[in-house]
Amino acid sequence: MTTSSTADGWPSLRVEDWAPTRDTLHMWSQIVGKIRLTYAPLVNHWWQVTSYVTPRGLSTSAIPHGTGVFDIEFDFVDHRLVIRTSTGAARTVALAPKSVAQFYSETMGALDDLGLPTRIQPHPNTMEAPWQATEWLIAQNGILHGPGTPSCLNLPVVPVE
Image (cartoon, rainbow, N blue to C red; front, side):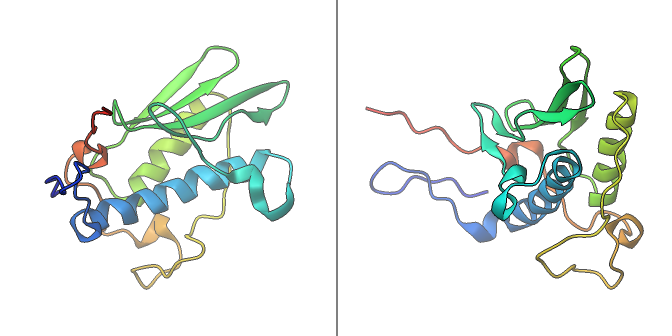
């Protein structure tokens, strides 16, 4: 990814340099959003599935489940998806080069391990799929999208003066 500085000190972030990572993150975030959609009470304009910026990435915030809650965070510092429950249990999924189908499978497996079995609509919404089949679970032949390295998800830090 090109990260040269501009005249005013901000890094140059050219979209075409990280488009495959952006597309992958878009599909991975749809999976996480659909998990939240499964459990969170409906709010106008689907606001219950919003992702929130955290110091480490993006989070669902608390999602109700039974008598407890859980959350899911894209940790772009340690390159992992972290699923935490109110009981203290947690599972992680590496944010590494992999197909959307593999990410889906690992995320659903982590939820199952935590006693949070979840079913979601297994195809992307609001975008045209770059494959013929409608389900990302069966449409993947190898890695269709994926960050080249976990560091693709890091944005350069610009010191504040």
